[in-house]
Image 1 (tube, helix red, strand yellow):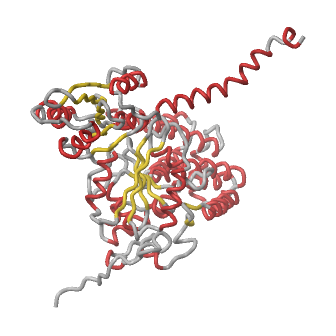
Image 2 (tube, helix red, strand yellow):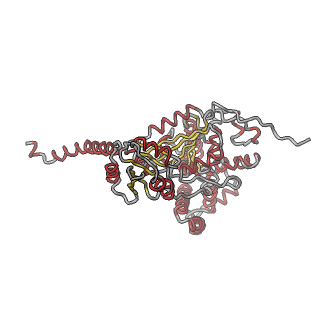
Image 3 (cartoon, one colour):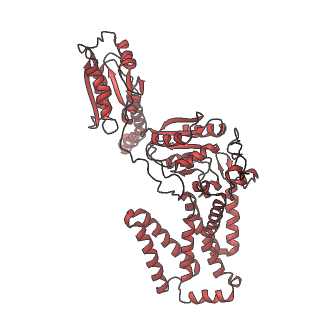
Length: 532
């Protein structure tokens, strides 16, 4: 009865079995790749071809070496990821031509060691025993050398692909300072840091994350300066990542950050090598991901997002003035639209009479309340900003500027918005561009809409309530265990020398106390004095 009366029973049974069968197939596929290399060269080559689907960019060449061709060899590499000249000159020419008259009448294991130790003029050689590591090296740009009769292979360092090269950073420009920026190549990025910090205690640890992409992720820090607990915590968080793909450092940022539900960034990202070198010297840790020019820095406090590399290249008084302007821009970008909405809607008595009359005359023909007017203009500006970013670079800036001018002037003449609102939105937009870190500016852009809603609902009391909640939220945030508002909360007097006010370099002789607990001394330099 059940078999004939329930036609979905077999379908349900098959559906219940599908996850198990899929899991078994994935296990079989994984075991298929982790098989050991066999002494049979032809079997190994056929297995590589079958696993890689006879891909056209995978080059497989088998040949013979030795005086009478008694040694059968095979090489495997990926076209486009390897240096073809080094394969021809250092591998094929050496094994096929230069040792042709050499007597290799030795056993296969001894011949394997002979080729590895005395024959190949290649910098990096790694012994491989299983196919999973073989595929990883081949698809990373190395050349795999296999020998008939040997259950091992040699991964020869021959990586070479076309990269963008070192150029000036596009997202964080400076007037005075280095003009080089990170690229999409991991080894180039690590070299840019090594060039600046020539200390043997600068340690580099690399691991591969991503089941499918096998992306190289490296952490760089100064041993003895960085906090050991922070290093261990970062290594633990990276080891817990179990995902199929890592395509950019943003993947890592979201997977290791302390707090998820917050608009404020708790991990700093930059494409400037000098900023990363300075952070490492302070005791922080850099996270580099192959394939992206943006490097992550942990731990990151809120004050770091208001600081720029150029602050340390200018004189202390100029750097202090610029930082004060940044904090002033922070309040203007966050609160200007909401203050206008609150005052014009609930607190008109706070305005001088001439100003109140001017605002009233401007809003006489506007059909919308101040809140709708502000929201409309802010949304239009965000659309223009996004359009300027996505448009081709040659016309992107023109579209954003012309669009803002035309739409703003047309909206005022049509009576949809007041001229004062256009001025306020323009001032807010300009202030939001002052921040060195775009991630922090994006947080203020989101909070600006929330403060406008509070202002339209409760007036100035809503703005004050929002500020209190925001400060409480900031106090609850942590970046790898460190308070997000340090050195302001908790207040650290020693670290105030490099907070809002930037003191001269001869007075910055201590590293931040919460970041570096091992070695806080940066030197012993006295203030400069004129000659007598």
